[in-house]
Length: 558
Image (cartoon, rainbow, N blue to C red; front, side):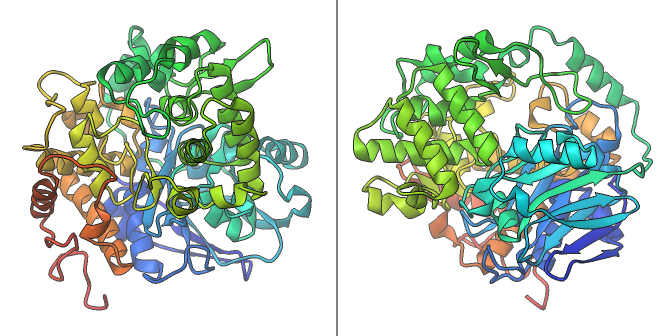
């Protein structure tokens, strides 16, 4: 099995000490990325750790395909205990960081401890430097980038940044890179901020040399020449109008499933504001969305479809420039646009203020700095719902993304069982139910019959991609056979590895008190409980949603 190479670098920011150790057995078993991060986190983070405790670690990882020249490989993963969900969670980000990270020669970087002084940490293949940066307190993403460029000659693509939201422990704070790219879901930026770390940079010339099969160039060529693919013009927003048409677009804090202003914030509206192509490292698919509004001067990258939902339809906003501004504010301040938009939509619902753009933008800033009502909203929907007197639209404390499960029922079940919470990319089952795949893979969106095994397979497959690390939008190009060839392993063996990653997450969360009662939804689906039990049977888990004691991931010490 092809896997990333290099030692684990542990950075204890409290003692300002670093150690390295070989983790070859973990790398050879889990490939890289999410797989390696999950295994190390499972074995090294105490099961009862508080998310903001020094003992909670963040594991940054790449995969073997980050040394290739193939499209869809400009990504990396971060794993830790989420302050939003309280469970073990991996988030990944695109952009241009992954290859700079790999060039340091480390397969994984573990960030642990807590510093009393605000730090920037510089990781190179020649050593690690700790820099005190009090002048960067509550600096925005772009301000940190400007400082690192002027003081160290480092580009945005070499940086991990905790914005003001991370420093202020907003529970859905992101870790930002390449200015507009985010380790977005789950609040790992707040964990980084709680450690007193403002920025980590990566530089070097020691990337491992791996033999990647020439099929990589077939994938790359097809990505480059797929000129008629809708994602190339409008990114993920290309699905907006269709999701609205089928009744799967959350609207006005999930009270409706269609938005009459969808065309004003959807793919066409975003494309009209796109002024150049945008991409990730080595990727010829170029589905990113650099956008600009000449009249107002608003310039950002995006919004993607999920942001269009969270700050658009769910907030009652039909102005694409307003959504662009919300997107840019979240990137500058370091927050997940989905969670931020949803919790603001909850506030709008509570105060009958849908459609109020000015209030929305004020609230984004108040959340980041925990000012006034922003302090409550910074806790997320799950913790704020009772005080706001609104329904708790979360799973395991994570706010819902789009692709509504009341219409796409399999995606609804996938939201419920996801170890990460209400995140659409964990199983990505919506792609089968719209469908965005071929007829041979498509399923009827209504009902749950026959879907649990398909969800298990999608979760396992995505765990493999996240370990590679390969972008989910490669689905039209990355066949099972190509994945086998690139990772030098039988597909069944890769899927078994993916299943182990999911099970390690589940076991860790079980030890933190998660069980069947957490695999739930704020709405009813037909035969949901039967389908949930079927999912557990397919996984080989107990009917209470826990991993059995005889599972291979449970050691005697557990």
